[in-house]
Image 1 (tube, one colour):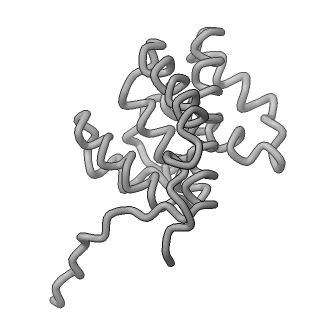
Image 2 (cartoon, rainbow, N blue to C red; image 1 turned 90 degrees about the horizontal axis):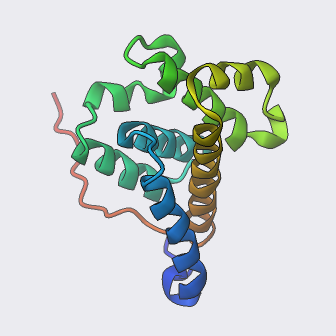
Length: 154
């Protein structure tokens, strides 16, 4: 698979606007660890290799553990996430899969136990933004760096 285009170069003003939303979310008060977990989980759901690579790397830079990143796809069965993170991850899945879920009331009620009105809006914008980035990266075939080495045989 090869990239279809560089969407940053093709529409720089539009990308600048999307990046401005990202900048606002970074200063919204949501925890950096939560932001990266949400970005990674939405990217996993959408199957965006470029974004999974980017956000797991960013999460590690901000102190996230390998264990929590490895267990993210099975967060419901993993005791390593806080109740606030669990509420955010459930909301991430519901909003990312909005056509299937329609953001169920029970998921929303759990979200409201852990997030203020402003935080709930900021979290939802974060989810929408990472979904937009996923769609750009997947549609135009953005490729993660390929410096990976195969695991050695045991």
